Length: 141
Image (tube, one colour):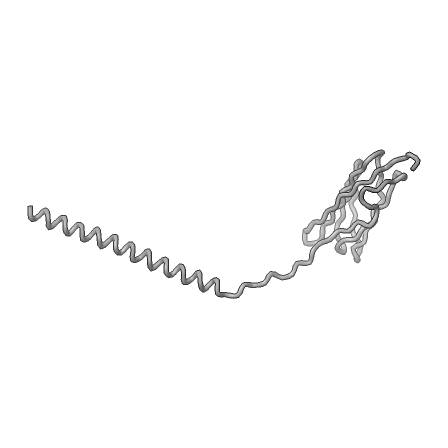
């Protein structure tokens, strides 16, 4: 009986040692992680560079305007040399802005409300979009 008791005590000491070593290793790893985290947080963060925004401004026609002409001129300004798409009720138009970003396009309207989507894409792939509504009516105002 004494022999079994010695074996149980030795096994208990071995298991206790393994558990204690595991706890010690985990605590050491946690302390190292916290030190690394603190050193990373103390480093100065790089400021993001200011982004030049891609803009699109439609000067003609104004949104929710009424026209008695079947064709209107869309005039606007965007990033220089941007590609412009104009999607009207029945037609699509593709053009390029000039070196100053100005663009002009003649588009056809259909009777009633016309939703016109103007989208500009710059050379970096940025996109700016505006939606305007123009009502074409032949009624006397």
